[in-house]
Length: 169
Image (cartoon, rainbow, N blue to C red):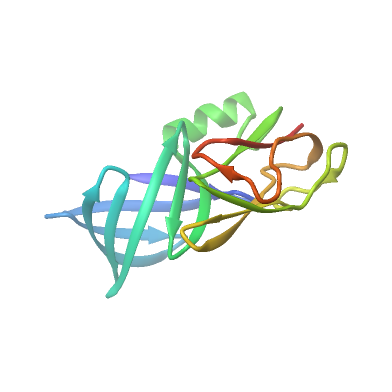
């Protein structure tokens, strides 16, 4: 199955081919480079992956077509679309992020730093807020260029999973 992924702040989507080899084993081809993956579901929202001999514990959360992952302390948000969905988006002309974007806390944690103010113009991929979760600091970035219209995050405060942090329009 072919998918197209676009990480937050990335300009172009990347083709990803996923082929099941049976018994929780997969061949993953990312932008032409092949990987062999053993995947084991550990818990709801957690996978243990062995990728070409390297071990990874991956926590993930799906939100529509977007998947949030925590891998080795790094939080990533990735838009994932199969070929059919990508064609539908292209027909609608809406693969890029548009409109009001609400940036949410990817997991419970503490706001360490707020990097923007209301009214500030930001670029796609620019840091907005730094949240500490699981003893790691994660910089949450703007999914698009625009203006910061609301800032809910306050330095030093605890936040729950999916807490509203910043709005970019």
